[in-house]
Image (cartoon, rainbow, N blue to C red; front, side):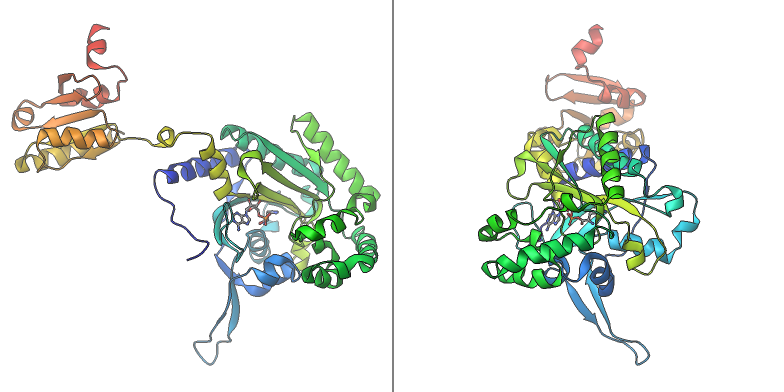
Length: 433
Ligand code: HAM
């Protein structure tokens, strides 16, 4: 289907590396995994992400789930376009505020948006995200949380050796400062809106902040003249934002302030951010996030300020792959077992099982191949060591180990085989030392 794709080896090695590294880094910051369903009640996204956003108004995969029995009501369901709303729903549903401290949760998985597909933009794409949420009494509003999440992201980028990124940072204010800004925006828009696209004309009425989502080139010079949110922050928003910046400087996290950054989802308050990456072209936002101090209440829950982010995993992998040769992320098996003839299947299968249980990555050959074909097959698979399983070998419990790179062959006792295979030294050198 348009906008979907199959992920194949060896690229999936890179996906696994990203996910594994993320899990390691999240553990260091004491995050735990949450898994929420891939589809939810449509209302969750309408109320959470916002009716007037592009995501909810144009991009969701929504269907009417028909009633199966008379007692059952039909329900509108939606494939999740993002995971923050689902996490906050779970927080409310399971009363996670009753657990001690803050909830620090991470997730990875597919998300669905009906966008126009292009490089780095898919209809089924993958996010790795994390959320910190909890009652204000547990410190959920503290700027320390904002800085910690951003610093964690920098550790992840460094571990994956993704370079050439920029952290763009803004404060979009709190519900206290938003009405004055919305008013100013509405006023400024009323003079120019008829020169803008149809979407913007609609946005000017329903949710003026959303004109910043507009991607129509002709509208950009007009948008440039609109008032900036930075001029409307109240005292406490400003202090919060300054504190975040102070903490980022202290932990050596470089950032640039971008007071045009408002993000495409309605739930954001105060800190909002995006990381962009140089090698990716038009779809260069590799991750985005921010605070959502009012989201829990908007979904019918208790006050539970939070902050989080979602990484576009597809784009992370693209950035990773751009920096390296395909061969460098393929892990070839360490040994190829070559049984000589059908009678050797059983001992070969047993030997493979033994070596695998000793932690070796082993490919089991075909008993119908001649030795030459086994060598060729091993070579094509990038395997340098071949264990030959013939009658004499089985009888003596000593196996011929052939190193395809050096061409040398040695006899190795069954008990020594695993160690010899994992030894990085070729036979001749190992014998000398
Ligand atoms: P978002 O900015 O909509 O935020 O998405 C986060 C990231 O997902 C983007 O920066 C981008 O890398 C990736 N992404 C979005 N759409 C696509 C697509 N169609 N194809 C490929 N990648 C895409 C959120 O989703 C928020 N839930 C993030 C958040 C968590 N805020 C607070 N907590």
